Image (cartoon, rainbow, N blue to C red):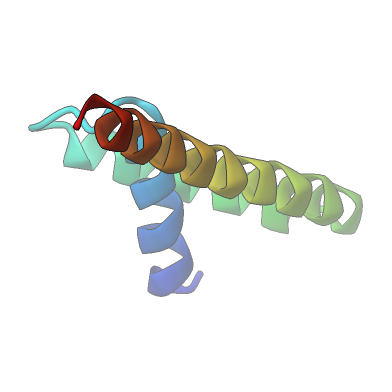
Length: 74
């Protein structure tokens, strides 16, 4: 298992949860579980890639929404 994949997955999980502090081990474990379940089956890999990409895009959407809200308040 590649540590960079785990790190990135944990980061996106953490962001989607609202960036709570003190829960880094929880998100790391969730990422390891998600990645290991994806690697068990070739069919699941494509489903996990879709899941990961939707997680990534939703994080980006959330970030852009918060940026636009901040800009409109000025």
